[in-house]
Image 1: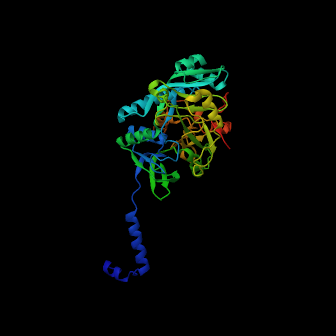
Image 2: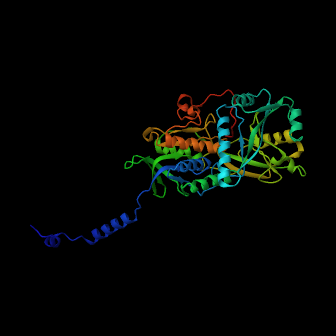
Image 3: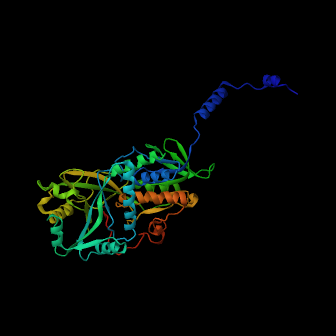
Length: 438
């Protein structure tokens, strides 16, 4: 029997090449960090992802929030100076979500110590026979939201002689309106998530999500090679949703990115204060051939935001950063409704933004299914009207990923499979509100 000393003497001596390879292998093993395991990984740090990370961390889940660009970037749908909040919807399943969201906005403000939500009435206008506007009135009544229907004369008196309506138009007034500061709001929820113990990482583009064979959870891989392991995962990547989900699973969720443009118009000198929240001027929406909306003068003194609800279909990487639709209908609308109180000759400021639009303009909130089962939840397709509901959507997504269910909303309108039954999704008896310029 050979002694250890003799065994060592007769063992083959490694060649210089083998020694180098062995040294490099040892170095790699030392450099490789063990993959940290999280309870929940949230991909996409816009309003939906940030609200989700806040909610999961609030429930003591070890949470990681990943963002492919800088935090608070201007390339998606969660930046800018203002968003409208309103509970007046043609669809009767959104108002309750808005009301629950309003409470959550207030709760978050109280925790952070500053305001992001500025309340004012909501005014919806349009022809008295407009199907969508009639549905708004019905939806308000069904959801016990106080609503007043007023004619052009009452409108003129109530809103300081500022808004002029045609004879056959009506106004629908509700108390649940207001303006949200979006970039400030996203920052608020990210800050609260950090206070709850969440981990945040930006400039981390996710290119693959797969089942983790070691843990049974989900493995998330970044473009730079970094890996993250999570028991569960939430995907809220806005205009990038369709591409990412298709690459991961082959499933096509019909979410079309749209580039849209926001316009600010100059108020006539001497009338600037008339169009402010302090004077009771409302957030507003106009139903008709073109859906137009706006907010009171707030972020830029002397200017009022009035855009068209629509845009140009494109990929997020294929933006023009220019106006996406003809301004003629918008100029005509401003002239007819505000006369010479707002200069309709040209906007003085423009900002570009992105929508993620589904065929029925309803959200997608669901389990991804397939090999992922209930381990991956997606939230997307918010179709240019979801920001106001960010807090409740974040709560719903956190409920789904932690409890496997939510009691805050009936999800049948938001399931992915609705498009299998009908490519247009949920059936509605009024026209689309988002206009698309091809």
